[in-house]
Image (spheres, rainbow, N blue to C red):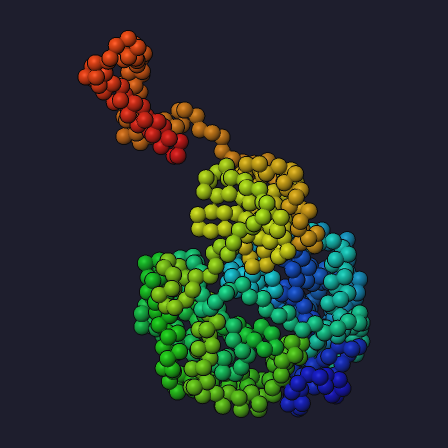
Length: 581
């Protein structure tokens, strides 16, 4: 059955392997497989479609859509990725039909009474997820594909109306693709969904002014990401790179335990290549150097035909699996969803056979040109990489007000008409009001602004001089309402406060032994010396009033006075040294 899907390029290459049709307006792929039936319903919406202020809205819809289904004998789950959302189920044909029907019914009428509960579940899920890679944020900023570096901030403030509207406009029949491991479309499917449009994958934003680039990272880990054109050659290069790193860093160098690389499609035209190696702290410099050397070898064209043939042989093994059509359904469905060309097994084999060592050499240069490294210890400027921007190009200008930090004399908050800046020794960090991805608010007055480029400025009223409620209101009025995320009140002990001024006793304890000795000596000599100053002045200036003074006597009298003044200066210097500590 081959009704519909004529707009998907290359589907005719699947003849005899995968069948395709439409079910109530939803493009559908199916192929037989032994055993239970598995189905997946893809929607072309994911985290990269959100904003920072609404991040988590797609995941929230996914959870709400699955709530009413509860526990069943069929295995089912949902996944929210950068560019898609997937509902999948495995069970009997009747269980699969019931599940898909239930998902679509819930998408048409989400159980909004569960909204607050599901918010909390998502926050709990995030807290147990552990750290996430910050490289997407460094590459893309706080938008699009960079949002995967952030917590799902929208779970704090999304309204029922926003969630319903997201489901109605993004979870539509035109924005979906269904796949089923069966030789027919099961009877009884009711996949009625709102009409809509197919949304293309979001265009990538760029926060890196130049690549290759690097950012500092945690000890023990070296990570590389690069964006390359989707191609068979690029997928083979990832295999070659992973094995080269394993050989060089583990087998030959003995520096790493894990060394690997991965190729993952991002949209219709681009993929993300990721490479990783671990290291003990005392060997991480060797790992960084070896990692770069391996890439340099591949860029120089020192890739053997044996390496290519080995990678090609491993890629060809995918065609040896039983029920090949059913096994390939998810990847075919994602290609249809993203608008990428669909290749049948014969076309894929032909492309694999056509890849040459020169093609891999070209991909190696492409990987390096767009590379972003995360490295521990020393940087990578020695290898021709540029440190990713650590501060903004300029601070806000105009008639902004300046608010010195109460905890760090080197830091000043500037609140201007066009944005806010934190000025420090290494340069300013600025977030402009017309480029705010999100601003979180607290009832105690705290504000945290994140710009599209990923830079963040946090305004804690208790930590900056002169940040009054009126000044906070000025910031609030300038930030677009759709970027505001209201967070709950903090416990009193969680609200930062400037430290109390140190007592005299605390200042004394901070003095070094040398400062204490200097201060005591200066005080002991200065106090009686100052008491002697009055008669000295009377003697000196009394004679000047009546007769020519005895210059020698005046000099002799003022020498100890001068010494006493020097000692007093040293006492003040010692006191200032204590204050700085």
